[in-house]
Length: 206
Image (cartoon, rainbow, N blue to C red):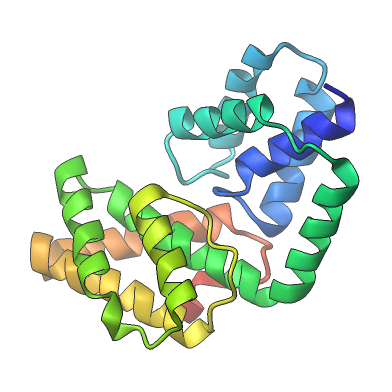
């Protein structure tokens, strides 16, 4: 695999977990220290990212995403760049907002025992009608909640705020308001560290 294609695959694998400047910093780290190593050197790369508190996801999950991206690299570099550019132009700041929102909700849920986390996701899926959004947007949110797929459609910030609120209501219902407040507070701190420099403060969603 050519260097540029491999770099794009690494970017693709990291995108569900990082955005903005943290993603750019991670790519610079990979290029400087890990780009010429064997694929299994990625474990060291992820460990270094984790030491810098850049990731808000289990290392094994990030490693799986990178392996999947490397095994299915972009077929065409120009086409990939064109898509990336058009997505950036179409989303701009809203793209950062969506990434921040999904990262916050995923972090909140992932801090719970797996069975409780699944209950929160089901609760959100069952109450998505509270979000007055077009069907394609709701389907994208369902795919994210159910299958961890990245949301690429634009979503208004007001809807993202409602989405975070829906997650918090679910937390209150299943773990109680005291623990829900603690989980939300801890998740906000984690996302603030992971998203430092992204251009969209997580607290705008609260």
